[in-house]
Structures are given as C-alpha cells and as structure tokens.
Amino acid sequence: METAAKFERVSEERFLRDWLDGIGGGTPAAQEIYGKIRLPERATAGSAGYDFFSPVSFTLLPGESLRMPTGVRVRIREGWLLAIFPRSGLGFKYRLQLDNTVGVVDSDYYGADNEGHIFIKMTNCTNEKKPLSVKAGEGFAQGIFLPFGLAEGDHASAQRHGGFGSTTAESKI
Image (cartoon, rainbow, N blue to C red):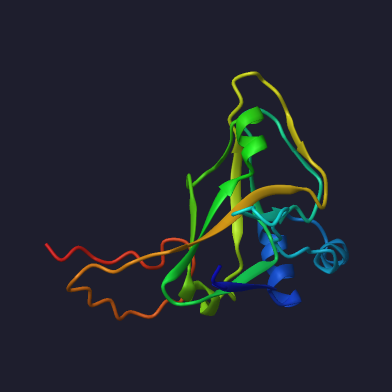
C-alpha cells in the first residue's frame, strides 16, 4: 500500500468560525467540540474507507439535511484525491446521502483560504420515515483515497483559493 495523505485538524480559530456559520451554538461549546475532534481512521486492516466521526450527536428526520464542519483537513500527495461517501450501513438503512453525491477533496484544497476544512453535507432520504441518529464520536461518512490521471494536452495552471465551486472554469467555446 502507498501512503497518499495525512489527516490533520484545522486551526481552532478556523473551526470556531466555520462551526458558528455551519451549525451554530456558542463559542465555549464549539471550543469543547474542537478539543474532541477525532481524525479519520480505518476500522480494520482491510478497510478501504477512513471513517469520519461526528464531533456532536445529531438526529436527521426524514428529508432533513445537515452541513457538518468536521474540523478535519488532509494533506494529499499530488496525483491523488479523497472521495467521501456516507458510511455503508447508514446509506443502506436510511438512504443517507451526501448532497453532492460524492465529495471530492483535491490535493490543492489543503492550501485553500479556509485551510482545506472538510465539510460534509448530508440528507436523510429514507422512504420508511425513519429518523437517523448519530452519537458524538460515531462514524457517519467514509473517505477513500484514489489515484487519478491527466488527459493528454492538459494545461491546468490556476491556483485554488476557495472551496466549493471555486475551480469552475469559464467555457472556452
């Protein structure tokens, strides 16, 4: 196996700012949550996915969404990406879905203006009208490192600054 990346926490200042924007709640509670952030881990030696653990307990009623600031960033080797999916069991039992279907974290996201803070937005899409509850410290998503290739004639040279949608290029038609 090749080592493709290293998980880290974002700075406490970054987390507090993003937590207040994303979830809400006071600064003392957010500081306590920051102190409990657990970096993603694989559950077994044969696991492909690194589990992302919820920093707080939450419940999603059918149709509800949540934008979770994870407090995590990842330094990824060039030529690799991190794909993020719901945990298999939650997807199977509750149809938990990521709002962008599959999250893609590029290697240059680490240096973005937001420190590469990984957010995971998810929705409980159950047809059985079941609420989905996750306790603080439980896994709710998983990330898998994948290599990628380039197309012949690729000339990308722009530098990333932002997060979601920041690399959208203007059409050259």
